[in-house]
Length: 168
Image (cartoon, rainbow, N blue to C red):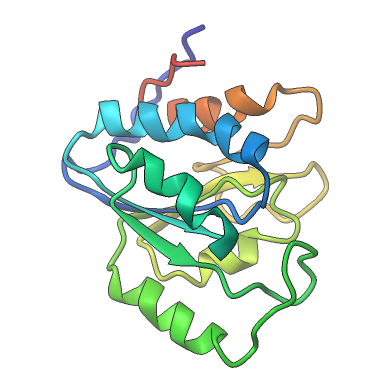
């Protein structure tokens, strides 16, 4: 299936940070088509993934899609990992040092993670929001639909950003 492409393209060689701090193999396999579509659309992109340290080995198998891995120290209110409060300032400094063009929130509906991704210091932020919740940027955030297949959510988001995403 091909998703509509808008006129919001990224630079030819962007630095992109993707947050998906979920622990499971299935969680990541659902995100791989989005990473692959991003790589195809912008082959020269520098794609950095923020995830739980427990997924480092799994994501190490996708070096053709991912240029950098950053262990997520957790965050208050997120159940996936107890936050390492002392590590959070250094982690955010590391994200800022990437000088990213775009930070993508692929962690879920965004009600717990949009604020985190906004702190990465990227020039633009994209992701999802629940109806009735704050939408950080109506140009780059999609309304969350519970019934969307997980694989297609990220591909729809790429379409919103002006990138073809038809690899589901």
